[in-house]
Amino acid sequence: MQKEKISNSRILVTGGAGFIGSNLCEKLIDLGAKVTCLDNFATGHRKNLEAFENNPRFQLIEGDIRDLETCRKAANGIDYILHEAALGSVPRSLKDPITSNEVNVSGFLNMLVAAKESGVKRFVYAASSSTYGDSENLPKVEDKIGKPLSPYAITKYVNELYADIFKDAYNLDTIGLRYFNVFGRKQDPNGAYAAVIPKFVMQFMKHESPVINGDGTYSRDFTYIDNVVQMNLLAISSDNPKALNEVYNTAVGDRTNLLELTQLLKKHLSEYDSEISRVEIKHGPNRPGDIPHSLASVEKAKKLLNYSPTHKIEAGLKEAVSWYWNNLK
Image (cartoon, rainbow, N blue to C red):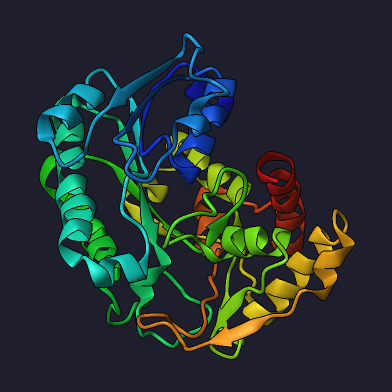
């Protein structure tokens, strides 16, 4: 049923040239959907589109979600929207809260308005585990959040509030997916705000010492990209009315600290280059706005969306390392 529903659909992926967005575009095209990608290439890359950019079922609109008319053009005739476009990164939002708010809040609102006006059937959006803020509850369950710890966290929580309003006021069905530390193929290892896994992989491959923020005991529910793609497909195709207008943890339900993570990376990278096993790890100060521990409950997603994660941390890292070695070495 999922494949049939998707293959007959027109789907807009905002931020489709980014890490998560491009993986979604590729999978949706494989399933037979007609896919429109909206991206301004602020953080996305054209190379992420190369595998399918000439496919007749793919369309690229180069534009910015901060422009309402661009959003209306992209949403016209669309059945489902997967809204991935955002400025990620807690440090980026602390350095420049205004731009993070413009993209993540005003841009989000533009897309909701465009979705409403175009009669989109369902609006699925990238929410964030940062919404849990200073809540110390573990595992994180969807209805217990704390106080946000960064401008980025505030923007992602505001997304959830707006989605609720658009259901109540305009009857637009939405599903929010709170991503937990997603990693995998196509994730950019470069730039000041690179995620920890691709950044460390690239440093190891250069025989450079990665720097762990703090003593390495901070832990995360690292989530491989295939699990995230699965959740998005389920969110589009679910026929369970109780699954709609909810937010879901998009994770594995397991946690790994940074010391364990670096050891796993060394283990898998050493299969390609034995010298990597001898690279030392360095430590720096804790990063402002970081929460010490993150672990998701995925019971709600399992119950309402039939979610079943396929990759735990080690299986995901093995695949990710292979991709990085073959594509970025």
